[in-house]
Amino acid sequence: MIKINGVVIPTPSDYTVGIMDLSKAERNARGDMIIERIATKRKIEMSWNYLTKEQLSNLFNLVSPVFFEVEYIDPQDNGIKTGTFYAGDRKAGALDYKNGVIRYKDISFNVIER
Image 1: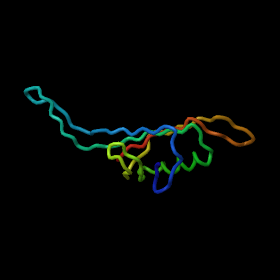
Image 2: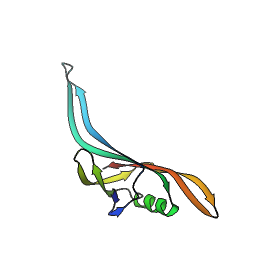
Image 3: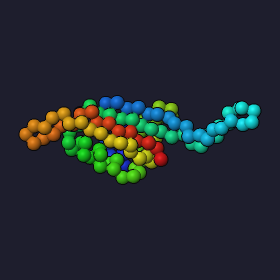
Image 4: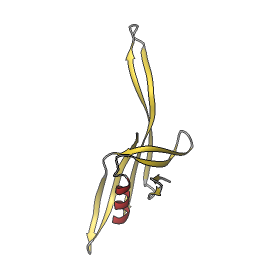
């Protein structure tokens, strides 16, 4: 479903694509709104219910560079798109720790188009 730098990542439990218009807006002397659309960008929010420690480490390492390529399903274009993104804050909760093995739950982060 999603590739980061060409690597297929585990399918998220939740996947939301936000479409954001970057604009410069102001009102003129008559009070009319003037909007100059600068760009339209994507923000992809993803979460996973459970991941192994290996899956989590691999996923977090893929998004650790400042910028990286993401191939994703875009709802507006109804197809596969590729773009340059950066990661927002990443979080992972520990489910348990048994026999020296940790399991993770409620993993989430978003990626924002450059």
